[in-house]
Picture (cartoon, rainbow, N blue to C red):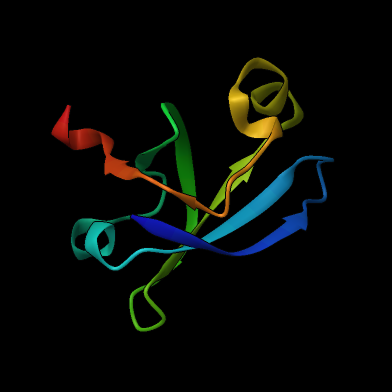
Length: 82
């Protein structure tokens, strides 16, 4: 389970989503895919000390997924588990 820490506008017109989630940070690297609400998103930065990671949400991702209506709590899965 994760908690949204920050949602900000990215320079490309999409959004940067920062999530606090200790369990997925044990084995995370830049450019890893993390499934958020059934959508694979790419890790663009992470901070194990702060227990958070950031993913980018492009306009196309928002148009084609349910991420237009974000809940502030959601399930997170490391896509390597699937």
